[in-house]
Length: 156
Image 1: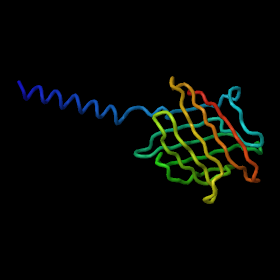
Image 2: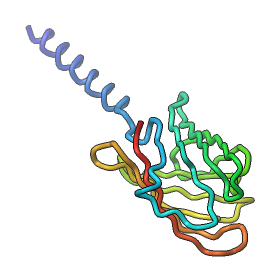
Image 3: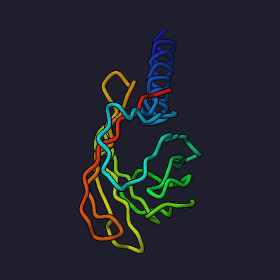
Image 4: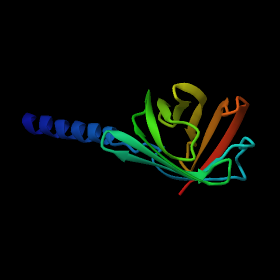
């Protein structure tokens, strides 16, 4: 009888631990820019679609949009949300590495660099209901002009 209870407790704890490990990250999924709710900096491009997906022990962030020149923009970042910079590859993008750091279960800090120089930083926060997220960034453009931008995305 005692062995059965111990076995049941062990199984229950194992299931709870597994569920905690695989709990859905609210950042994951496809996000579409809501231009009406956003306050994008002038002379900046815009990321119209952002997709977060899990790749083994890393995260893949795929971004599609339009550069400030009006030409299509596409980038892919693969790394961990550990605060370390990982390369970002793509076309028509003003940075070559990005670092994400988890602040809490709904908020990440993000910094973007070009050749090791900080270009912009900010926070990406998913709303409590998980249906939208807001990316607020501050930085300096390629010409040295400071900017502030707020992009609101709706989850698809």
